[in-house]
Structure formats: structure tokens, C-alpha cells
Image 1 (cartoon, helix red, strand yellow):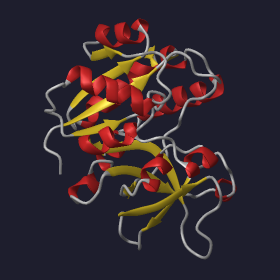
Image 2: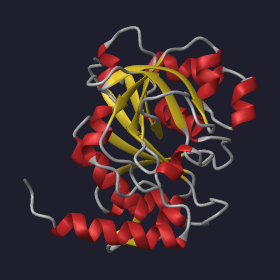
Image 3: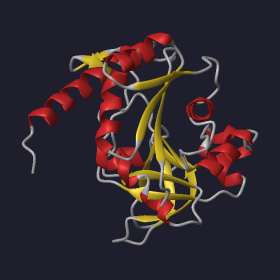
Length: 252
């Protein structure tokens, strides 16, 4: 297991479907602050928001957090977190990077911690998480990315062999909904951002396929639930209701 991981949260204002969503208020705070709080609660290590705009950085600093400004024109969150990593840690002290998306205000701290577990195996370059699909319609929904992983129940981790928007694999057994949260060994992130886009990446529009095409190993850890990603104002309302419920639910 890496000894000094850092959580980096990429955030920008220019989302196409819901502009400025990371600063939308949810349960009394900007969404990016809610995500930052979840990352802090995971207690994995240092948490830094990789902000494309000053207003995002200011919101995090205002609640006592750490943020770094990055180039607003990065093509992906992976490129943004790599720039942030180089800025905050040029000496290479952090040996792993957790990429937590800035539009997941309901992500459970336990799910963030789960993403680190596959890195216990020194052969794993990148770790990610997924959950078993429960709703029949999600099995054929191309917006639900499936992780094809070699996991024999009751095991909770295994090697990811492919990611696809198609229904896969065929036959009897569970299908896994991929959750776009990644833990990279530092060297793996450095290698990944230097790679050109892959053939299958361009076809499926899934960035993680670039790593698989290059022979990098990705392992999947299973979690219980899929966090709600906020892509529309309706999603924001659902997330706010879920957060309100979580805040009133008695702890066990």
C-alpha cells in the first residue's frame, strides 16, 4: 500500500450540460465544498482541489481547505490533477494520487477509501471502484459504464479486463457499474498522461481504456452503492435530498 497518498479533486466551471455546477449550492455550501468534506472524512491523506478558476479555489480556502489553480484548458481531469500534483509536490513525496470527481457530493468516505485497497498488490498500476448493477434497465443503458472484472463472489476485488458502454459480459452472473474514481500510483499517473488517446478510448469515449491498451493493470474494488453524479439541476435537487437524509439518519 502506498504510504503517502494525496486526494486531488479536479473542478472547473465549464461543464456543458450544467455550467458552473461545482459552485451550485447544495445543503448550504457549494457542491465542490461538499465533495471536499467527503474527501476529508475519508481520512486517506492530504486533500487538494485542483481548480480551473479562482472562484473555486476561493470557496475551498474559505472553509479552511487547500486548493491550487490549474490551466483552465486541460482536456481531462487526469491532466488537471497531474498539473496540480506537480505544483503541490514537485519533490515527489506523494506516492499515490486519488482522483475524486468534483461532481459527486454524495460519495461515501468509505467508497473513497475502498479505491485504495487494490494498491496493496504491487502489480496494480491503477485502482478503481464499482457496484453490482441492481436495476434491469441499467444493464443495457449506454450511459452506465460496465466494468468487466474477474471477481468470483464473495470476493470484493479483482482485475478489470475491460470497460464498455455495452452490456458485458454475457452469460449468467453480476454486471458491475463502474464508478469513475481512480487511485493511481504516482508513476502510473505520470505514464498515463503522457500516452496518446487509444483506439478503443476514442471509440467508447472512456479514458481508462487508454491505460488498458498500453498494458497497464487496473483492479476494481466493489462498493455497495453508486454515488449520484450531478449533471443537471434535477440531479442537484436529488443530491440535496439525499444529503439531507444522510445528515438526519442515525449513525450505527
